[in-house]
Image (cartoon, rainbow, N blue to C red; front, side):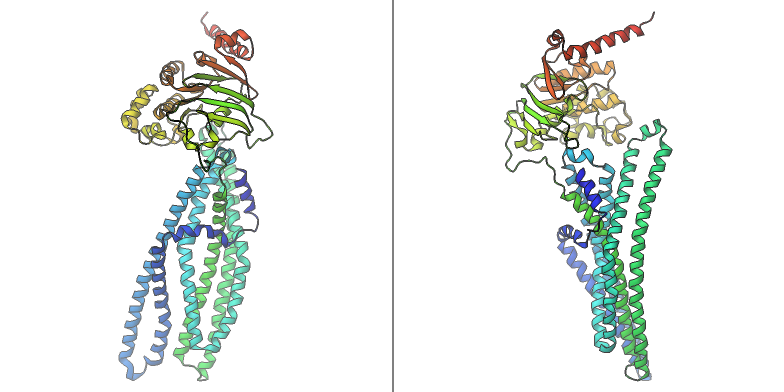
Length: 604
């Protein structure tokens, strides 16, 4: 994933701004009703708060005279009602904005996962799963605060600041001028330091993602780590990664703390100065005590709003760093996509396969040609085995056939149609793959078998398991087909995992069957059982078999021998042995070595 790695490196350069949040606004705009309701609650809460200074002024100026004994009770009763309105409106605002934040994050996570799920194989050749998971979880959580509490607090304090400023101007224009002069002094440090905070926050998020990627990679291979007694070394490396993440986060928090400190000091220092000047006016009789109280309370509300805005600015800057990382990821487009006007594959499917002068190099190794001038054809219903030494390009044939990659030259055809002109999902739907390394998910046995056909009935699942010689061991599990398997099926043996993969392929009922060392993990007894099941399944289907053990492909209609990305020999087992070429050498190595091993193991 070179683009992702590049974007992570770019994240260390000062290019992130609050504009990074803009592409995510549509997620919030989808819920206009929630936004309008939250704004209404916000306006009511702000208005209720701003009435308190007026009430205090009137109470001080008129509520303490002997002839207004009952007036103070009414003022306090009114203030209590205002406080009640403020409490209800604030509670409603909190519920609405936090719910909106959760809704936005849920939508964003769903779209981000869908985007990742549709990326092509080249993307995952260099992607770090742990880093992707970090973006899917930690970075999207940052968005929750941006669209939830941070946005709400920012709007509330903005309204409060505007309202308080207006009240100050009405109360005392002279003192208000002093406060307004101080505003640029407070705002300029916020703007100047915002970029630094954003870049430090993004660096902290990138460092945390690297630590997460390292943890995910090693925990997924815990048995290997323990088998090589590498726990302490791995722990040390993760502790170092965690320390780096802590140092980056501490630097980001330090920048935010400094920004908040300066903003709050400047805001309240201006209030203290104005209060001193106002006190001089009260002593000179140019202002009443109540009026000064109203002005001071309005100034305090304005100053506190400005101080909280500085905190929100820091939070939004951190969210902008996360948004930039998410936007970078969403900007990566897969190269393997359906054409604008995809062709339809013939119906009913025939299962014909053809490679016409195909050349290919993996994106991560463009200088190395894996397949060069490859031409082959497989007739409908034919079983063809592909053999050859490691690195000959056998597995690449499957990768190109399923259009995980596009060839750099030539064409790959299924039923006479170039797979590049077909929707990849439609082409892959005609194939069932049994890989060498069977993938088992941490779900139930039935869900694993049903993975390629979610609508399959229980009876169909059981029938597929029976044909894959898996039913017996499945029924022996604690909950049978409902047994939850560990992550990657670690609770099963290699042979059991392979039989589940075979059952999954059988259930798909596709016209083309792709077997990549499908029986390599089975013992002799289970291999015989599964091979019989596969022989039954292969009838009437086009089957491509990749095999290193030549004994498993003796019954193939044809055997293709690959070397250096080309088909160098073709024929049946007998005809290829008689040619005394590459296949014959491979056969002698396997069969003679096996016979010698059996002889050595025989009792004397």
